Length: 83
Image (tube, rainbow, N blue to C red):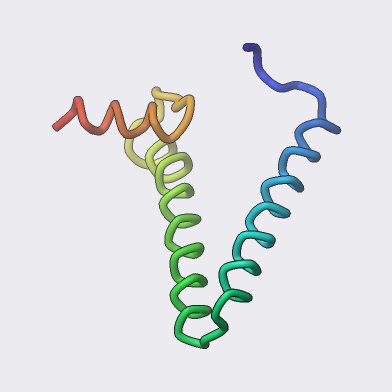
């Protein structure tokens, strides 16, 4: 499968990710609304976003500028091999 190059499809993919996230988060909270669950869900989303930023931006710009990761699994495989 080749790289995605069409800007309209790239934007559509991004909006679909946002929609999936909002829908799944909303359904989780609708099942049993509790402020603690909402806070834990928000922390979970925030932490995963920060890890994604770390894996792709921080590592590439501050640790290993020569390597370009193809995805999170590629990043994890490389990190595992370096151990």
